[in-house]
Length: 198
Image (cartoon, rainbow, N blue to C red; front, side, top):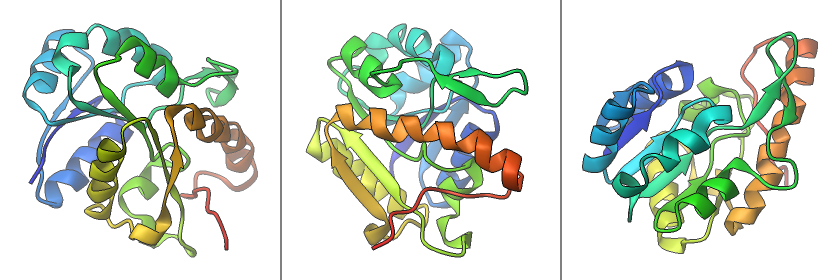
């Protein structure tokens, strides 16, 4: 059992918190209120950032002390939204939210994952017609292994998980968000994910 704090209790955070609790982990899910987030992060072994990406850097930098030595799993994408509310551009072109977080929180082990899919797939990957791929980006191998193991408790088969390397590789997976509005406009909100076919 792992003690996990999920920051953000919207569709993404709520879905993750429910599934992780069902998988046997001790989970605290909190909204964006600074006090609640600090308390949850202080007592957790793993913290999941499921807050809207555009404000994540500011919110998490404020928790520097609480996140010291912790694994921070970042599932958010930092985007500028278009008039229809769908992602229109990246907030950190030439970089990524994950890189910005790692630079701002040097004593925290940031691992980027689960950001290349619609949120229902995060906790039910086997419901798609073909296996999706979950990518891992991060500097610390042990932290990535911990997150890998956590994903398996959510139904991700180990062969569906690909370690891309250091945190800089997150700029590639975060850029995948630019596919999302076009796919949604074409096919609706039916759950989908990026998959590497071999």
